[in-house]
Each structure stands twice: as structure tokens, then as C-alpha cells.
Length: 168
Image 1 (cartoon, rainbow, N blue to C red):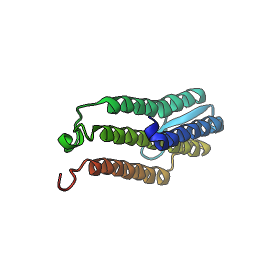
Image 2: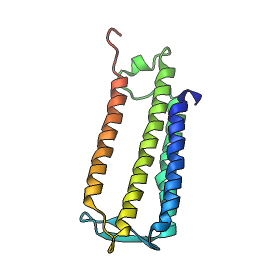
Image 3: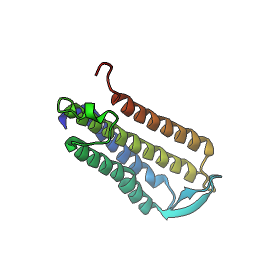
Image 4: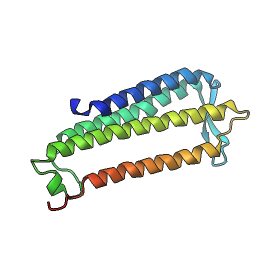
């Protein structure tokens, strides 16, 4: 775990910032929060502010943390994984570095997921400050595109890492 001090440090900062941001701004929302929107940005579901806060903290932050914990446990002990060139990367000489890389990679993805949750919360704030509540498309689609591109980049790093080195 100490091998990944930077990854863990960033994740801890992201979690603390997310908890602070969500808890400190949820009070700005109306008592009944427009929580789901159709493709045109019109609200289709409402939830009590307290329920919204619990959902954001439990699902928005808790779920990514559980994912990171599971990936850390699984990757730090796994001996057989479905990887490109697994025979090379899981050889006794390299398996510890492979595990370490996968653990760190999972931690970074957890930070990305929590950051997306914070953006979604910010969108909720924006949407609920309008009367009537309305989710602005111009803020949703660029964020979805960015998340998609970051996820593709995250996967590309993973695939690139597990190419077989030349001459091996």
C-alpha cells in the first residue's frame, strides 16, 4: 500500500474534497430536489434533499471507494489474471510489478469516478437553481464526452502497459 502513496494521497484528497463540496452545497438545493431529467433537460423525478445527500455520499462516493477496495484486494493477491501477454506479465519475476500497477490504476480510476460524481452534483445545483428546474444540455454533453475520453485513455494506458516488450 505504501508503494502507492501518490495514488492513495490523491484519492484521499479527492474524497475529502468531494465530501466537503457535496455536504456544504446540498443545503442550497430545494427541499424537493429535481433528481432525474429527460433528454430535453426537464425534471422527471424528485427526491427529498436529505435523501439526495445520503444517495450522493453512499452511492457517489461510497461505491467508487468499495470498487477501489475490491480492486486493491483482488489485484494485490491475484496470480492468474486475464491480461494481454499474461505469460510474460505474470511471470514470477514481474508479477509484483504487474499487481502494483493494477492496484495504482484502480485507485486512479476511483478518483476519476468520484470527480464525475462531483460534476454531476454541480449540475444538480445548476439545474435546481433555475425555475422551473432544468438541466442545461450544454453542460452535460461535454462532460460525458470528457468522461468517455478519459476512460478510453485510462484503458489505453492499461493496454499499452501490458504489451509485450520488444525482444521479450
